[in-house]
Image (cartoon, rainbow over the protein chains, first blue to last red):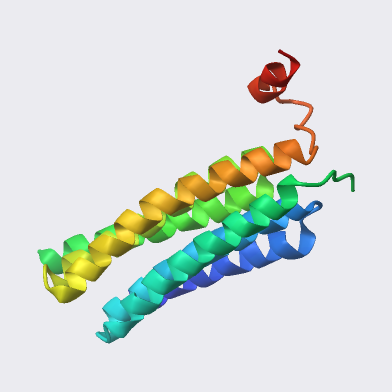
Length: 85
Length: 109
């Protein structure tokens, strides 16, 4: 069961990486990075549940915080300039 | 009982994550991708965290999980909103099949 859940989340991460590599504009890549961060939070929670080591949840909490700050900073950076690719 | 509830929630959460990421790859423009991915992945991650909570019960670890759920539920829509506004302001056009652009209408006023 745990292996199934982990493999589903790994597939999710690879779909996000595909969008990061392919995405035609910069906001596409930023969205995919945001989603990848949230998937990693879920991954940490699964790891904590399957191995019983609860410090993974601390990692998940810190990762959610840093992911939010990073996405917000990138959004503010993209807002300021014209973009035609 | 508690274990089957936890694993059921985790399975549904992982499937929601998977569908969100498929939407991220398949949909045509950034706004569609943003709304599909953000909603599905937020719900899926919260369900996985709830499943972990059901597995380990209301202890100190459970308090950390509840904090994490509240945090993801608050920050993920905020980041998505900021990103959508930023990409609209930086001039990325909508997909040609889109029917409604209220921010553009507001800018004309």
